[in-house]
Amino acid sequence: MKNKKFIVLLIALLALIALIFTVAFLAGRNSKPVDHSVPLPTGIVGTDKPIEEISTTAPEDTEVPEVSIDPRESVSPDPTPSVPGPVATNPPVIRTTPKPTSAPHTSPVYGKAFTLTILEVNVPVSIGVDNETLDKTPGWLESSAYPGEEGVCVIYGHRNRNHLQVLKDIDFGDAIKVTLADGTVLNYTVESIMILEPDEELRIPFISGQHLMLTTCYPFYYTGHAPQKYVLVAVRID
Image 1: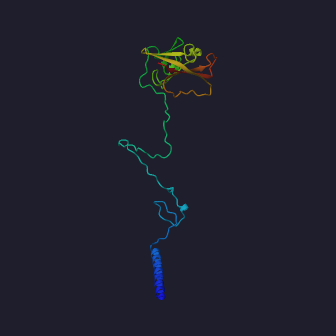
Image 2: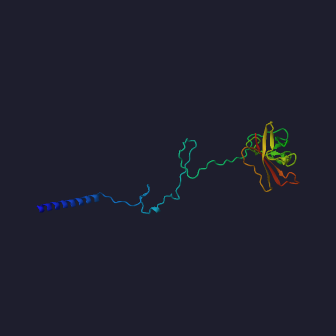
């Protein structure tokens, strides 16, 4: 009886060992090796070189195609455009003194274009700044703006009493009136007075609005050719 029990236990033990080996064998066939290598980025083909040697920059001789848009075509803007680099906003605006767009106004006497009234003194101004004109009256520089136009109206004159000597008594905020040949009256006020040295260049300022620039030699009382330049700028207020 005991021998039969021993034989049954031995058979059960052998069956258990066989089952364990079978399970281990099947598990070994279904398992895959684990890849411990670093995955390459998407789009890069595997290479034998180390990852740090792979260049992500374009070759130097790569040409970037130029894209031109026909302004006649209706193109809706991309709501989220990709623009490399900083985008310039509010670009600076340069205003230049415009030339007259029509024939200047003239009066029948000496071809005077208009009249300045400075400290109750009337100063007629002629067209042009040639010597013949300036021998008689101050002259309007025809390449500058005409009174009433956007820009700077430039007037040259001598420093004698028949020209611009009255400027010696003018000050900031004083009024200057311009009467055109057709009777139109324009009102200006003095906003700056400058004295230029002999080596300084006279420049027409690039400023917005309607301005007068009166220039003459300086000092006003000087024997011979005065070395400096007197420059007055007035802005229109009406």
